[in-house]
Amino acid sequence: MRFATLLALVCLAVATSSHAATPAPDLILRDTITDKAYRTYRLLPFDVPDGVKALEIRFDYTGREARTTIDVGLLGPGEKFENEFRGWSGGNKRSFTLSASDATPSYLSGPVTPGRWQLLLGVPNIRNGQTSEFTAEVYFQRNEKHGLPTEPAPLKSEAGWYRGDLHMHSEHSDGNCATKSGEKRVPCPLFLTLDAAANRGLDFIAFTDHNTNSHVKELTALQPYFDRLLLIPGMEMTTFQGHANAFNLREVVDFRVGSAEVPDWNTLLTEAKNKGALVSINHPRVPTGEACMGCGWSPNPPADLSLVQAVEVVNGNDVESPVTGIPFWHEQLQKGHRLTAIGGSDTHDVTSKSVPPPGRIGIPTTVVYAQELSIDGIMAGIRAGNVFVDTAGSRDRKLELSATYRESTVAMGGQLSVPEKQSVTFTARIERMTGGTAEIIRDGKMTRRTAIPAATHSWSFEETSDGKHHWIRIDVRDAAGNLALLGNPIYVN
Image: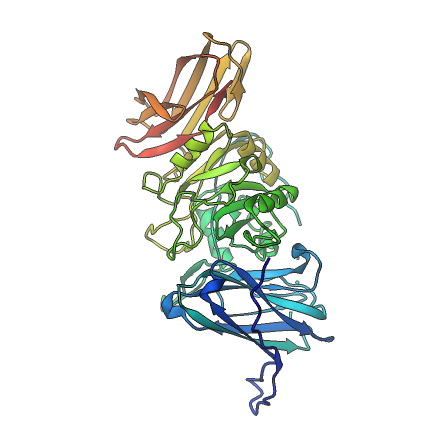
């Protein structure tokens, strides 16, 4: 990474305070951010002496009225990013603390090791001609106030369809909600999201706060209480060139795409793969801009999609909006990539009674056929592709599709090799969609429709092979014509 010459002034605080409640900072860090810093990362180093038990950092910057945005994280001593990383709050906090046993959400507890620490600044937005002055006050605390549990067994051991939400945020990034009094908005406690998911009857959720794993410790501690709701750790890898969820990720990954350390998305995707994560591209067609910084999928150079397993085709309630991810997904399928379609609410406020963009928890619901209700089971189910998206988040709608050629039968996500002029028999089963219509989609184009006359409706249809590669899937529309269920493909040849 080429860091701009730091104008950081690291100075010992010289003032002494007559008020014990407001001590002077031990260090003050300053940096001047110009428009040349747009979409770059930079470091402000400072040294922590022996004997410090906790750090408190308070920071601010000018230029907010001109839409300047400066994101903040923290690196400790270490040789690799994952060893250095102590948290990332982006633009959602103005202060944080951390110690061996406690930390502000978005940050990681752990020993405050003496040596060189660094504030990590990201600049997702600064307009041409603008300048911002960044200031951080660092406080060394010599005593600490205030510690962790283990992996859950499968919550259910039988195979079946399990319903969940794969995209949400909490106080550990930019989730927010109203206080009990309703008088103001605050970072929304993670527990409220878990409780809302449990009350909605979901079987699993994935927590995907932006560029941090500070929520993992809390999820682990709360899993025994939520004994019917599987809690999957994750992270929304939030970059200037697109967002993607990494599921079953407990460690942080270096998200600084475009830097010397992480030159491109392939570097980040390889690290996520090496740490065992399943990766899904998020809201790929949402425009990138000041309203949603880095949201659109725009890796430069293009990403190797063999390192990606899924695409969020429905984000909240965008299923048939101009920014739905379905066309992007179809385009990748046509190129030969096998990516499982999933959905996620991207909820930031589980207490909201309305359904603002992106959506409420469980809208949409991703329904996965898994061998058991465990993290490994759900991850394997998504990789296999026997998955459909329930866009309205019902509790009982179902879409099943299988295909048979001679002695071989596969479900959604499966593949059959069928010689030219040979027929494949597809069998579909739809539940709780009376009055709706099923649409058979071949290579991205709707080829036929079938009415659904009953609460449970099964039928078969034939496809004749031409010996070439094709994919066939089913969508289901409700009686009003709205897309209700979105199925994954079966691949032929």
